[in-house]
Length: 236
Ligand code: 13P
Image 1: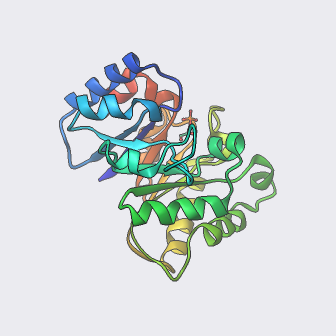
Image 2 (image 1 turned 90 degrees about the vertical axis):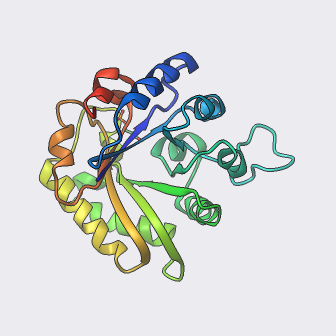
């Protein structure tokens, strides 16, 4: 079974998110794919009420959410809206909202405490990639985000090279496979019940089947292509 996660970022309005959710609701549940959509955080209430059989993820939550915290989204608000998964540490949260691996570690612990399955995003810059230090960089990210002392349940780790997000560029298939294998080997040193490694960054109709066929890739995290109904219908 491969994870297919649609990150709709802030591309869509409510009506458009409903239309795509409707298409997803008509896709027969299969053994091959687990489809999860991450609509804009403000649409969860409406979408999760209307499409009860769909699985939704949050794009983010705030650490200081509950109480006197104007403008924040608390993890409890996700849970009461039947959200089962949450992205953590997406590169756009890192670059636009100053998130770092220490904050991401705290969010990871909080999501686990609250039984929300985390989809942790990591990835290197073009500079790191070009200097062939990707593995070292990712290893350091993992060391800060995960603690060896903790017993983790299901974990989804999304490898999203920063230089690949929204650019139309991707690493070679063999590179994606090798990095996903590397990540799954490092994570074996920690206590997880189940590890799933996803690839994200410029996944589209023309490359998705090759990427999903890679041995060490357990799914894809898709941004702009996933706002298109023809991409979603591929998983029918
Ligand atoms: P794109 O698929 O638009 O490159 O975005 C990837 C991404 O950021 C998914 O989280």
